[in-house]
Length: 416
Image (cartoon, rainbow, N blue to C red; front, side, top):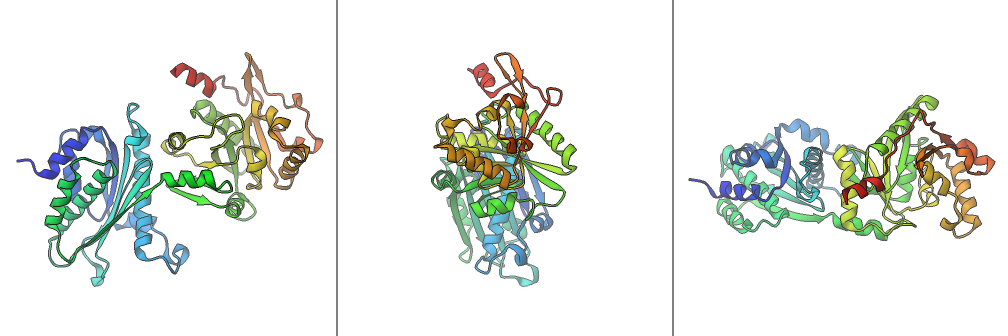
């Protein structure tokens, strides 16, 4: 006889989602549910059950990052969210071409089934994340009412409930009733939904805020922190420099990656330092419509799927970008180089002078890669007249160092 959870999981598999999960300290029953039903091989990209060590590596160190007003639940929630996001990124990297990023989910959970030294904190935290939101749950178990196996089953069903909740699964009420029947009076289960789309609205409204992605973490940074983050004199290791690659990346393709690699190599030759590349996209653009929420998530996921750091901003011009960066490189194409000081992008001549002053005072340098124009490869920087003070701030990539005759426009046209 098929149990209700098995029946629901089988129906969930028919909806063609793809998931990865990493669970710490529990999850045997969850594993058996997801792998014991036909269709699991198509839906389940990866499921790992680990010990406490993983959680200790991810969670904040209390003495360094935990504020006085931050309780253990906030710390634990942040850790399981990072686990879930990491799992979702793995799914994105391995997803089928036919699967939409909106159908890619990540799961993270950390629970303590056997209390250490009779701690009051008994239970754990769960998280499921999607393209636009994540759901967090704090579960505190009644002591002495269940065996370890029963606790694992109860927590696993709560995690399954979050998975169904995030996709608006039509039979979620049936699972909720089952969980209620299994609940004890002393159990304490709370969950909250965080709409990540709100981040997009905030980013668009607050023009001075950028959205920074590193590894498995995403966070807002204000203008002051941006300067600190990108300032090699303050926060970067002495043997490392930043290379920012601005563009629309619609789509991100091998030409972009090749140009970033060629620029890295060029910088390495001249500085003998390690280079960290950050891809940057502005939601606003003087020549194109503002990127909407769905497009924001689509472009962002291109970098997440490849594990590439990116910066999403509302800084369409270099005059806007350089206000918040110091001591770093930008890599641009020859077409961008020819437009950088075009009068149509500035209110007046004073703004052009401001950009030139910022480039010098903030120690910004540009690596310029050639582009094909009307069948001809152009890369000679001398074709554009620059203020003599600017010349040392622009570094040319020769045709031997970089040439790929492909563009995002061509790729989009082929798909039409």
